[in-house]
Image (cartoon, rainbow, N blue to C red; front, side, top):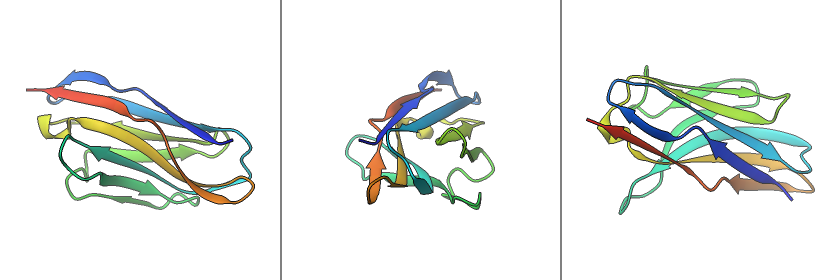
Length: 118
C-alpha cells in the first residue's frame, strides 16, 4: 500500500514564502516523475511543477522564477519552495507521483491548503 502525505500548507501574506513537503511511504521499488498540482473551487486541477527521477524540472508559466521543485530520492520525498506568493496562488496543493510498488501506479496525496492574503 503506497501513500503520499503532504505537509507545509498554511496562511501567508502576499510576498511571503512557504515550503510544501510530500513523503511517499509503503512498499516502493522506484519513483519516476513527481509533480505538484493545485486546484481552486470550480476550476480544473492545474499542473504546477514536475521533476523527473534525474532531477529535470518543468514549471507552469504562472510560477516560473517563483517556485522551485526538488526531491530527495533517499527519503522518497518531493518539495515545493514557493516564494513571492500572490493571492492567486491560493489553492489546495496536491502531490502526485509515478511509483513502482508491485506495479507502476499513479498516486495522489490528499492535498494541503495554501492561502495567500492580500
